[in-house]
Image (cartoon, rainbow, N blue to C red):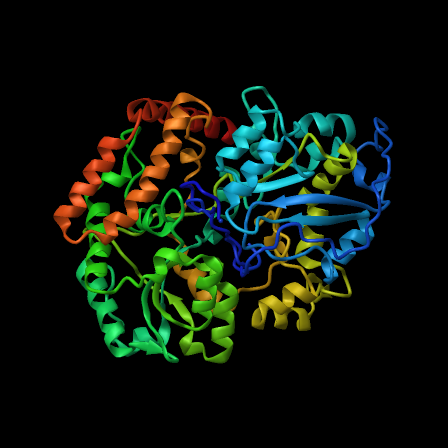
Length: 562
């Protein structure tokens, strides 16, 4: 997923089985697999039609209804794993028939940052752009005037936008110039926490293969000793899986700035605070965190960190999860939902389940990343958009309850019906969703297949009850998921002096983290870590900027609560 340290806002719905990718750290959707750049639309397309610029729709009417002639928008999705093309499924075909809009998804074939930087350098961008909200390129596009203010487009072409957007989210995303350039998905405001909070879950889980875990006697893996002993026992009892070596522990992929699993995920499991007495706290220097990083170092010394984890990307991980080759994983649960459903259908005991993972010495409850107001991704409209009016009108439609319902439930009579007085998936569609998610995406294309503007709170009204194996993991995270909105968007602008140094420091950590795990002794670990601390640039100035941004976030959240 993206490249920052903000973990994918965990998606709350009890029905959430789509495969997000995160930040995670860089880091939270629907389809696994390697994306193909420049996927062609599978829907009928036509040349853009001239729009009736300046003609206001009737009071309160959505502007998209004014013009439903065929148009194809290019939509850049900054996730190489997203492989779904628009069309060929019931939902996309229905939306194209209804609105006239087809989409040509453009997805990086390899490194997301390289693809995006190339586009930015060219000065020419596709019509829509979706990427992690905390990707530094969001600020670059805004500061470089490469994207258009959504509020100005709405004022000129589609006032309906202001009717369907959440004022709290608009307020949160309003820039210093007074404009809003992006709108989030999977976003939860303070008011949403009051309304839905007890249902909120986190994507951050520590999971084990159920049959192996039970064969080992369900060991306690919350302490460093118990963790290492369990990995060692699993390797000894199950040296290989179907002729291939067992991988004792799986993690998110290593990227240029680190590894989500070994940063925010681990720190959250250890309940390490992000602030103390109103001052931001450097979690990386926390003794509990360093103790657990040394535990992973010890695991490598014991031969328990397979070389695969240092080089595998998400597609390779998905293949190995499908094969059941991992004993345990510190991993985002929705990223392997499709593979785990398949394992569960084949043999429920071979599926992965969430258990209590690494904990601090006091055994405090984990403080996992729950839904935040920043959401997971933001979607922007580029200055090069081929039709401003149709673009803002389509964005408003996708954000609206009508658009969210169309994307979640699909077409009435095809994917869903009113059953027992409630709009819900038809039994055959629900059965396929719960047993073969990949086939469901291809045939129906509903329930977060197209997740770019999903409102996970709004969709609760249509969501079916969760079923295993996903339900077990969701339930495990309930009561542990908290909002971390006040810690969002703290980094300095990427082109500022502090921002340039912050980016360098991020890459420095990305190089340091594997070295820490591969250190031969704890003493060597300490030496490498101290060298990292000394080599960071402008750290005091960066911390001062982050502290000020944090305090501004607290004020903004209070204003939003109003």
